[in-house]
Length: 96
Length: 151
Image (cartoon, rainbow over all chains, first blue to last red; front, side, top):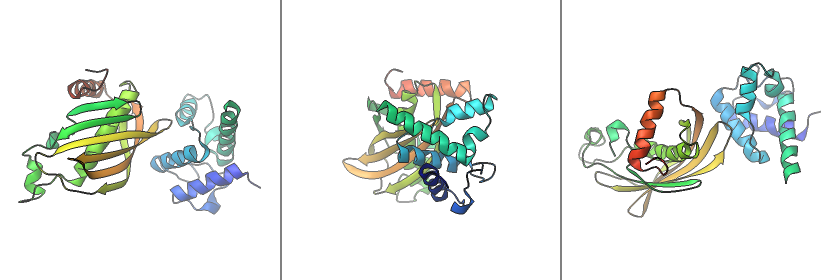
């Protein structure tokens, strides 16, 4: 059972890349497993930003991963990515 | 405007928050016109895209305080609605429509003498300047075209 946020993100990925929707599972790594390149990832982030009205902090995440402060899986494995997006949406709702 | 040097913006006319307007004049002569086209010189569509990309690029550079460089990553919905040839005045406007993390999206359009010539949606990656020489060149150009705060 996946969450509505997961399903929405998976739909967005399938629409903005050549990845088949059924391949997008909670344990799939966006880049290593799904093979999404950086331009498609940019499109995906743009679509997520618009769909949820948030600003996915990709630069911050990438910085943390590159600095060894966070494992890539924390942000770029689908289940975790959906969870991060849910947190961003909740944080936005709390501010409103 | 110097087509062969990709110098597409002559002067910033207005810059207000998320929107910029610049003007340029298509040169009377350019080697570009020798090929595009013999006997019927018009600015190539790809250079109209470049003109819109540079215009929105200056807006993003200004927003970033000349600290980060926008690099073209995607052009969508590009439409070429009319021809412009030697000597044509161009009024180019661009609006940032989305401020992402490390990227931005803008909509831009070109008019000439009140007629819409082209429009497009343009996406940029916004990265630290990869070379100090590039930053210096962009700063000098910002001064030349009158980018507010840099002139």
